[in-house]
Length: 169
Image 1 (cartoon, helix red, strand yellow):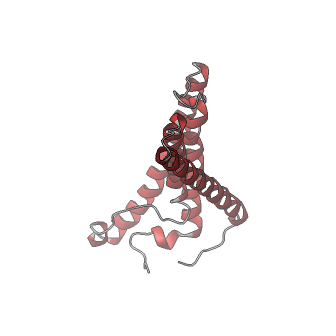
Image 2 (cartoon, rainbow, N blue to C red):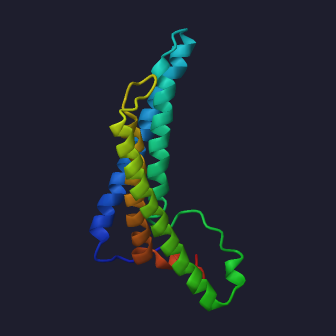
Image 3 (cartoon, rainbow, N blue to C red):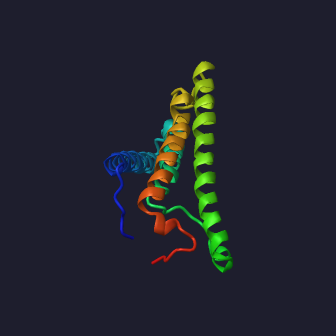
């Protein structure tokens, strides 16, 4: 799908690159930790921290990836039923898609931030890694902010891909 450049394209490019680095970095770290876990068990030496670290890296990777899916309107949507409705209802549903997506990501950012601050305030720690869980939970508000940015990007630069009643390739 052809990208329609907007005045914010350079900003969106930076955010896209940041998401790629975060997702790619967590994926590489996840792979290395799992390999270490497998080889450790193969050698008869189990590392207690690898299982929890794997879980934490997976949580980070998935939350960032959810937000990244909205950058180019690549999030999952079912539009088969909507395509048989009248054109004005399709347009309204497209608007609802943007409104509810932004509202959901704002909810994630606000309450994720509150939850993260709560984790830091009570100094809750991971069982095996002994890392404050606030560091793990901070991916939720980050994902919320990145999701809002990504939804705005898809609205400005990939609208034809999101438009339910439009011509989709």
